[in-house]
Amino acid sequence: MSLDREHLEREVRERCESGAVARAAELAIRGYGPEILGFLTALLRREDDPDDVFSLWCERLLRGLPTFAWECSLRTFAYTIARNAAKNHARDRRARERRVRPSLGTTELSAIEQQVRTETRPYLRTDAKDKLMELREALPPDDRMLLVLRLDKGLEWKDVARVMLGEDGADEAALKREAQRLRKRFQIVKDQLVEAGRRAGLLGEG
Image (cartoon, rainbow, N blue to C red):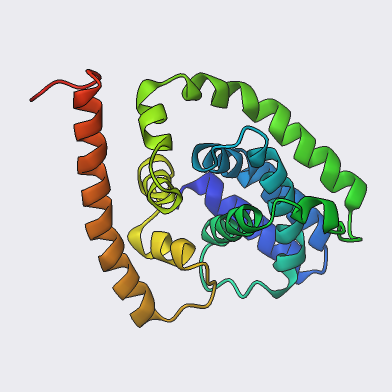
């Protein structure tokens, strides 16, 4: 873990343990919000989905911090919440209209959420122009998620498995089995993407 991430996670944990959950959520959203928004933008096809799911992620992070047991990193926990929020949103397009914002730090949370989106969006637009990204967007959601978590975000296989399982408290045996399965699937998907890039003339034959 980088020194910046280590510092962020320590600060968030200290605030959670002192009962300052809204402040902890603010720090977590500022620290990990940009990469979570990038993850959701790469994962979801519908143009309006990333912002909707990002809002849901912010709210669930705030609600989840008081019971987070710190058995994994906050970053992994954040990706697990994002993964589950994306899955839920895909099943229910009306979820955003029905949900109620949590009472803690509502105004501040909304302001931070908007700031992260505003500051992050220009960088994501640049990335979206890449032709290889277009090929990747044609993959099934779980395969896109796998590539983003491992290639773009650099998560360790154990953490990728935890996120893909969608369970904060998965046992070690389950994580090991899922990590092994995901390694094999990752290689298959990567080979498919490389072949698609070659057929599209984006990659050489070597």
